[in-house]
Length: 291
Image (cartoon, rainbow, N blue to C red; front, side, top):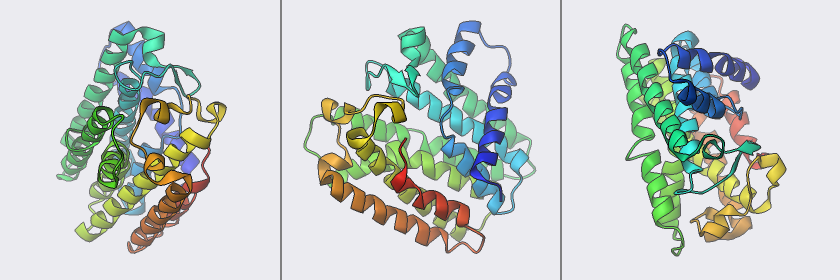
């Protein structure tokens, strides 16, 4: 398998060509979409998809459109998250958020455009395959970013602001708003490689645990991190009355729970009879991340 940096480079080189392959885009819309899509970041979700596919013997060239689509979906969610009606942020990845740069109307359309482009990319790629593996991958990504997945988690996140945090509500938000978009690349990558159902199940459990730990650490960074390292404001969760793991369990409890989730992720992915060091190392590195 390749290194994280090698997968990341593949994604970086493919994102803009993938977008442009869909046809002509009005200039202002293209500028707004590219502004956020090319803003950098870890590219964690598409990297996970490529690594998941390759570790199970799949074809990276076939997987790349799905990886790009997943990053477009993630980017759209960030654009919409930052809007005044949502989290009302003015800084993302160290520069003005999309609506600060282009206005609210164009930012909304840029998010809509990225989501639509993602679906078109996946469906086009799936239609060119000689089996249903692409359809299955596209379906699980669409489901996990949709009304029973990420959008469901975001809805509870914004509608329950200021209420008393309970484990049931906070876990639901974390599992869907964050973990579903980290589970999707594992599930889709394994589907693209035609993995056995029991291996796909292990990949899903890994993604869920990874996503829970990721959001727990994110909650900690909002309290303990620096704006310079994160590229966005800190202290936002408490100011908005967000239902976070820190609000529920405190910083030490959150740190302990994140460590348990990471242990769960590592244990389950090791059951897949392949070299899983990429995934175990990635999970174990979460607790020390600074951005």
